[in-house]
Amino acid sequence: QVQLVESGGGLVQPGGSLRLSCAASGSIFSINVMGWYRQAPGKQRELVATITGGGSTNYADSVKGRFTISTISRDSAKKMVYLQMNSLKPEDTAVYYCYALKTPILRDYWGQGTQVTVSS
Image 1 (cartoon, rainbow, N blue to C red):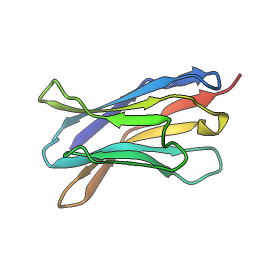
Image 2: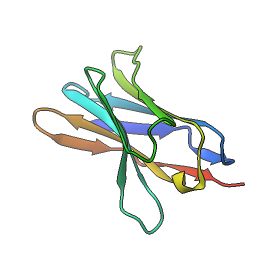
Image 3: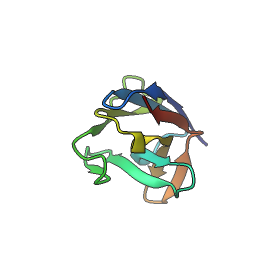
Image 4: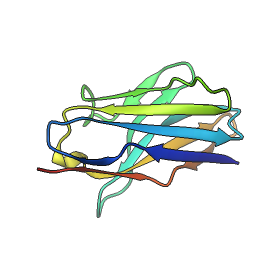
């Protein structure tokens, strides 16, 4: 089993920055994609950004140039993924979920979510 624990959400003013962190632990072998999705009230969950084990990244058009996804793990028992969010807008307000995908079996895992609120 894989456990994903997010941290770093909160309230920030428009134009501000936040950094989300996610730690994957447990049976983390074969996790080759990690990323972030978000869900705003009344909307479907949507992709924010993903990163592969090889370092390839993918971003939603709405966050390109403002958000940066990265993964640096100094603990071999964990895989970490980060989302640096700059120039935040009110429309970025949502619950942000950490995501991990094992390949080639295509088994996905989700965190509990962390609230990000952008408001003055």
